Amino acid sequence: TWFQRPEGEDIDILNISHCNDCNIYVTGHVRYCFIAGCHDCTIVLPAVSSVCTLQNCEKITIHCVARCFKMENSIDSSAF
Image 1 (tube, one colour):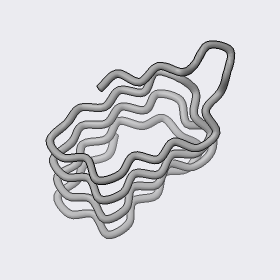
Image 2 (cartoon, rainbow, N blue to C red):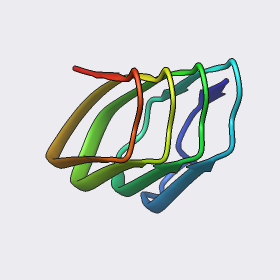
Image 3 (spheres, helix red, strand yellow):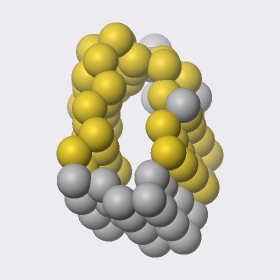
Image 4 (cartoon, rainbow, N blue to C red):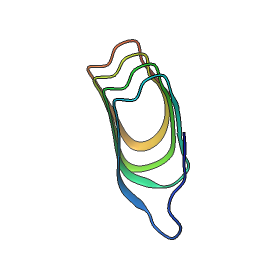
């Protein structure tokens, strides 16, 4: 899934939940990102200006550039 930002708008809150076996690329600027309940996914977030939270996920690979990154209760996951 390739998610581009709407023209002329910033995304305040991005919520990714309950995804299975997918690749997600977010190319736009995001203020807050919350990822929960995902399994066997790759997620790329190049511009999170505040907090990115990964919660209750399993077998996730996340590439994230953020001011603050928080991983809670996740099993067999990698963060870069």
